[in-house]
Amino acid sequence: MKKILVLGAGGFIGNHLVNRLKQSNYYVVGIDLKYPEFNKSSCDEFAIGDLGDFNFCTKHITLAFDEIYQLAADMGGAGYIFTGENDFNIMHNSVRINLNVLDLAIKLQVKKIFYASSACIYPKYNQTNPDNPLCSEDSAYPADPDSEYGWEKLFSERLYLTAARNNNIDIRIARFHNVYGPFGIFNNGKEKAPAALCRKVAEAEDNTTIDIWGNGKQTRSFLYIDDCIDGILALMASNYTGPVNIGSEEKISINDFARLIAKVAGKKLGINNIAGPVGVNGRVSDNTVAKRELNWSPKYTLEQGITRTYNWIEEQLNVPVKTT
Image (tube, rainbow, N blue to C red; front, side, top):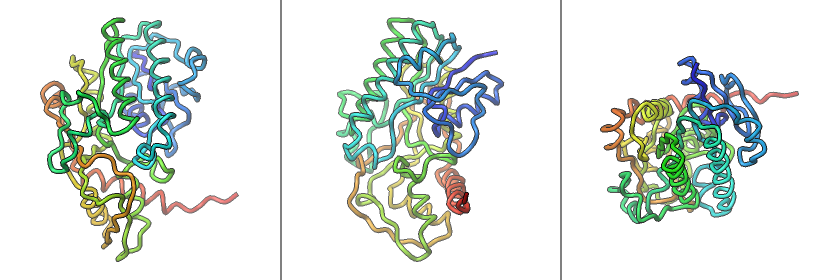
C-alpha cells in the first residue's frame, strides 16, 4: 500500500486532499499544528506539532514515504499578509518548515514531493492592469512579488528545485490561485476574500451595504477546492517538473464578486468601498501549461463553486451557540 505524508493536513486544502487520497485507499499520515476545524480528519495517523521544530520533525517524519505533500505554511488573507505586521513570522516560520522537510526527505530518500506555492510569487509590475494581468509561469522573473509571503514562496520553490537537481528527488510545484470552498476558515482574521465576502453577505440584512477593501475594481480568479485537488493529483501523476499554475481563468472584479455572492444569497446589497489592504490590481491564472502538460482545467464555474461555499458558511453562522 502506498504511504503518503500530508503536511498541513489540518488546513483547508490539506484536509480536502487527505479525504481524496483516502478514497484511493492509500495509507495517509497527517501532521499539523491543529486538527481540521470543521470536520474530522480521515488520516490513518495524525500528529500535532510544529513542523518548524526539527526535533518534532525527526520524531514524526521517519518513514521513506512514497509521496510527501507539503502544504504547511504561515499564511492568511489580505488582512494578514499585506499589513506588514506578520512579515517576519510569515517568512521565518515557513522557511524553517521547508528546510526541515527537505533535510529529512533527503535523508529518508523520499521518492516524490509536492510543494504548494502561490500565485503571489508573480511580479507586481505585471499585475498593474486589472483587465490584463500577466501570470504565465515564465513571467515570474525578474522577481518582484507583492508581499513577503510571495518572496518566501518563490525562495522555497528554488529550494525544492535545488533538492531535485542535487539530491535526485522528484519534485512537483503548483502555484495556487485563490482556492476556496467549504470547510475553510471564514471568521478568524486569516480568511481569504471568498470566505470573507460570503460571511459579510450572510451576516448582512437585505437592502443594506457591505464593506469592500479598496475600490473593488481589482480583479482575481478563484478556484473551487475540488478542482484544486484534481489539479494536484494530475500534476503528481504527470512528468512535468516545472512550477505550474493551478487556478481558474474566470476573471472577476471584487465588487462584481460581492454582487455574485449577494445574488446567490437572494439579497440586494450595496457596496461601501473603504480603505484596506488589497494586493495587486489584477491576478488571473494562465492555464496554458496546465492544459498542455496535465490535461487539466477547472470543472466548476465560479457561481457553482461559490454557491456551495456560501451555503456552507451560512449554515455555520446559523448554528446555535453551545452552552455549558
